[in-house]
Image (cartoon, rainbow, N blue to C red):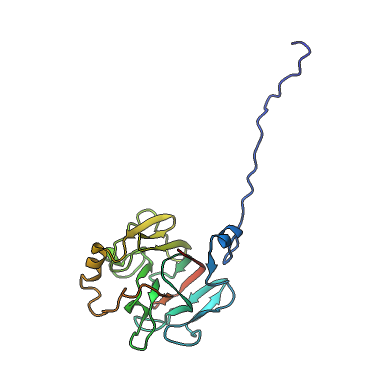
Amino acid sequence: WACSPKPAEDSSVETVVEEVVVRDNSLTEEEKSDGWMLLFDGENTDGWREFNGESFPEGWTVEDGALKGLGDGGDIGGDIVFGAMEFEEFELEFTWKIAEGGNSGVLYHVVEDPKYKAPYETGPEYQVIDQIGFPDPLEIWQSIGADYAMTEPDFEGVVKPAGEWNTSRIIFSEEGSSYWLNGKKTVEFIPYSEEWQANRNSGKWNDFPDYAISKTGLVSLQDHGAPVWYKNLKIRIL
């Protein structure tokens, strides 16, 4: 014992975990291998154009790596679509922020035709809105993270003030779909099920007989009269 080496007072080994920083509007190698694709690279607007149009509209621009709707749109007009390809079952992720009192949305399965004046006439919507500062009272089905006018959301604990970035996700599959906001599942539903059909036929969409009929279509971003920003738009086919 007398000649034995003295044990170190602190023999623990500190492990340093290096944080991997993924820049905006990019994909990791793992995401690429899993089939993800970018809808926007943070610089150019390739693939994006006005709904029912042929070019990128003046009401949208690129600002600090985000697609920005300037707030010139309204109930009709101002929306853009990713016209390069259609999607059926998919997982879509995006980051967004909105001006105080603003309203917007991300739509899918959007069909273009001169008889349709806006994407919401055909495409389901993930509701993007200033839940805290919107000037009018909001019904639950109008609230942030809702499957708009179809499935009421649970957004408790994950709402951020206007001007702060949010992360959202849409998973659409006929086996089961869900919307997510800042890591929390806000809605889940089975498309085309009896419950879904009941919501579809409850009266809200009586004036839009082609709403949610198509099982494939375009992704759309809505300018509903307030500045809104979108980035990190990425999607993979399921």
